[in-house]
Amino acid sequence: MSNWISMKNRLPESPAWVLVYASGAMNCMAYDGGWKDWTAAQAHNIAIDDITHWMPLPWPPAIDDTIPPPGITLNYSK
Image 1: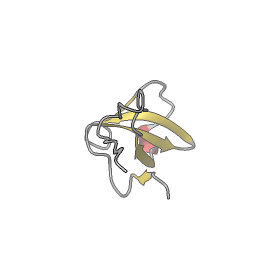
Image 2 (image 1 turned 90 degrees about the vertical axis):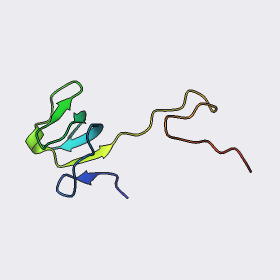
Image 3 (image 1 turned 45 degrees about the vertical axis):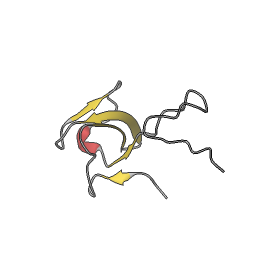
Image 4 (image 1 turned 90 degrees about the horizontal axis):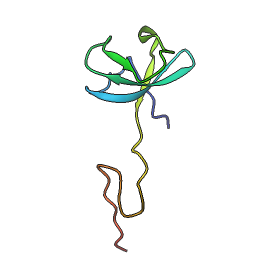
């Protein structure tokens, strides 16, 4: 199952950093509302009008087994 979401189906919730895909290229971009409200993190290798899909960024890795990423609860009970 793909985690990519078509721009035709829905836009990201605003504000959000997401991974975008356009014409064979991917980039991390910030979305802040309307269709043209995108900001690239670094290189501008993607034209906004060419974005076809996006996906949420994954949670960052935990620092160690006792400190989960934000929003994640570890359950050690057996």
